[in-house]
Length: 362
Ligand SMILES: NC(=O)c1ccc[n+]([C@@H]2O[C@H](COP(=O)([O-])OP(=O)(O)OC[C@H]3O[C@@H](n4cnc5c(N)ncnc54)[C@H](OP(=O)(O)O)[C@@H]3O)[C@@H](O)[C@H]2O)c1
Image (cartoon, rainbow, N blue to C red; front, top):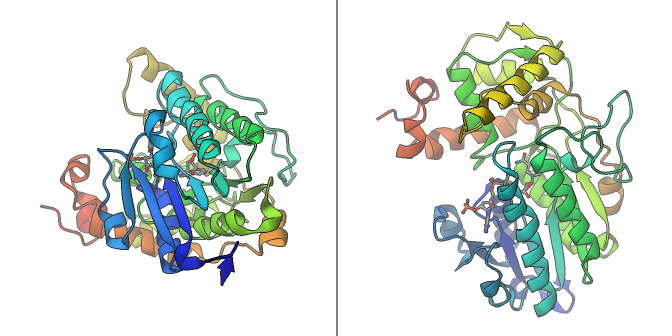
């Protein structure tokens, strides 16, 4: 297969955020296709997995633009996955690590004339539209009904605006809730909450989740970065709602050999509880997110409403890994890799989870 006159093995892909969840899956898929991959990593990044893949590692930081053109030189495609991901922290951090980082990267891409930029955005850019029965396409206005302290959403919207001003070839993908091996954020947070007995069903529990396997999103991103029709386009890369909140939690606790979650809390109460936790967390200057936040409530409590018809039609993409298989792979990684790191294990006071998962506890 040849692209733009180059064989796959000659094509150079540069990935930002390759040590993270999605970036690592994109790197893995590209290496499996036989393509060259160069990763921009920070001096503090854990590069163990990338080294196993045979990825070229170049040290840099998106907040320091001076070194970027050299890192991007010769790139056919730049996958921009790096970002501050999460619902906690001061605005200046989101400004620096999402908006400024994207501006710096786009400036450098333009300077060296990379072939195509694939910008990883999020369905969060739509803000918090009133759900009803609507199914949102990529034409939905961005930034609706933003919350107080909605820093992640605001920053991702602004990053997309910068992308729209970019003069070269660029494609945007908007994934929903990504899970899979190498998730350092959401799944560990959920498992810690389970470990502490803090998880409840939000609302009736019959809402279909937006959860989508990282390998599927990686495949969609690669298709979007290479398809001629995708230039200048944006694509939702979301689940179509394969599993309900209740069934997902049942599956998770079954895998962990824990009792079924029976505690319930209304969506409204959980939302306002999350808001109150955030207010208190800000007052006492919590460095980590509080146990309950509005984002966490929305993530598990709201139904899936994002159309992937455009990605299916233009790119021939749709999620392929079912949640049973995806969760099995994720927990396997979690047991083997994540919990065996000293600093991560220390965050679980009882280490009960490790033993339930069959992993080493010492
Ligand atoms: N996770 C989700 O559910 C989800 C859903 C929708 C969209 N997204 C989007 O998908 C993308 C990837 O998310 P993810 O969950 O894979 O993120 P992640 O696991 O938190 O990884 C973030 C990556 O960004 C890197 N990074 C952060 N700041 C950087 C900087 N200043 N310079 C260079 N690298 C930097 C991190 O490097 P270190 O290893 O050095 O920390 C890490 O590799 C993000 O744009 C996110 O907004 C994620």
